[in-house]
Length: 213
Image (cartoon, rainbow, N blue to C red; front, side, top):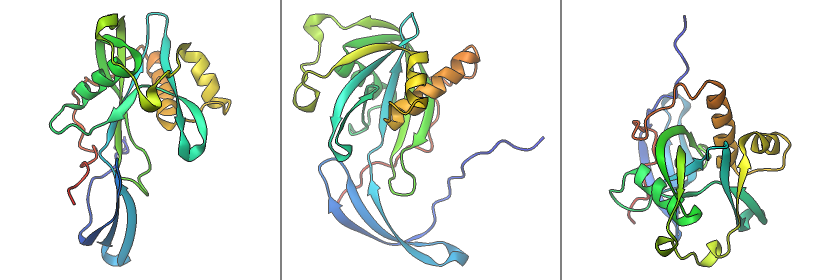
């Protein structure tokens, strides 16, 4: 029996690294990389903090989705709660619980790691972990996060997981994190949730985080 496929972490030597653009959330770097026999190449990429997201499922197998305006694509897309790993020293599962609290007014009694992915490995260092959250409970009204800015008035719905799968495959839903989360959860549910990793599963593929100037 052949070994299962696995991505190999093996960073090639960086000969030169230049901060090309300093943004409010992420940066753009230009690096000369030694690929050995393939020669030296220059790669421009988004230097990203990394992020987490939460697929929150209620007792009726409905997922919590929120709608936000995303200017680069000029659309109000449906997403799952998510946030940047921009608090030094904070465990990613703690960030995920905070984002669920702030964006969906929910807590969860059961957590697991659902799936990890690189958002765009050819152009970004972002690693994103998606958690599965169950046994949901509302945050008391007096403890809810006061949303502002782009999150002000953010619509929220609970949608059956099967309907979200139909929306993804039908070309109606496009958020990559939602797409990956929904299809992964649909597959795991068919397996009786066997194989879910613990909430604190190792994550060596995590983004190294935004570097200083």
